[in-house]
Each structure stands twice: as structure tokens, then as C-alpha cells.
Amino acid sequence: MRALIQRVSEASVEVEGRTIGKIGKGLVILVGIHRHDPQEAADYLAEKIVNLRIFQDNDDKLNLSALDVGAELLVISQFTLYADCRRGRRPSFIDAAPPEYSQPYFERFIRLLQRSGLHIEQGQFGATMQVKIFNDGPVTLMLDSAEKIPQP
Image (cartoon, rainbow, N blue to C red):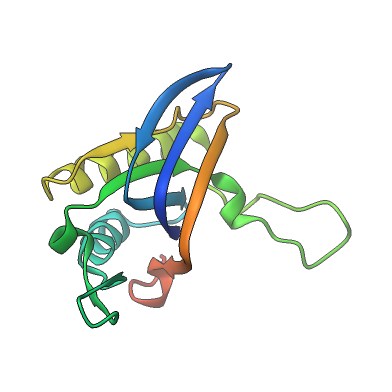
């Protein structure tokens, strides 16, 4: 499971011209699910994300987590995080989980984040979305659960 995390001053997501999710200060989390991801990957990334110290403290150091600052989270499913661009000019998405596996997995990841008590918004799984991001910093980080939890 991969998560591209962007610290934002605000963000929103639209489907067919209608805003379906909007946050203020917080994190946009773009989530890709690998076809062999174990359930522990979602647990690991949810805990890691809410506790990752990527917000400034009073000394302007990155010492505060999303939990510390009461950040809002906008979570978007994005299978393209598993694009393989090594050969040719068209990306291969063979490593991305199919929708019948990834949608319940994505919903489980949302539930895990909700346990933190933070305000969570989300995109619409499988839809074409317009995501507006006001990157703060900019701070953008990539997390990959395979670095911690091996895939079967």
C-alpha cells in the first residue's frame, strides 16, 4: 500500500462539478493499494500517517503530528500510484489491486483513520475526480507499507 501525503492549507475534491469533500489545514492522502497487500498494511499506514510529525511547532520545526494540531484529512483512492513506467510509453497497472479487492480495503483504511478522531473527508472510489490542493510548505511525502510489511 502506498500513500502520497501532502500537507495542505486547504483542499477539495469534486465529482461531476459537485464538491464531495473539503478540508482546511491538514493532509491530502492519495492511496494506492497493491494487489498483494496484507490487511496489516492499512493498519500500519493509518497509524503512521496520523502520528507523522510534519507540522511546525512554535520553533518552526517539524515536531507536531496531525493528531497534535487537529488536522483534517482528505483521502483519495489513486491506483496510479502503482504505475510501472519502466518499459514503453504506456504505464502498466498490473500491480494495482482490482476494484473488487481495493474498494473494501480503501473503506477499511478510512475506518482506521476515523478511529483517530480527526475529521476525515474522502473522494469517490472509482470516479473521475478533480482534486484541488493548496500544498503547504510544500511538504509532500511518500509512504510504502512494503518497506515495513513484506507482501506475500
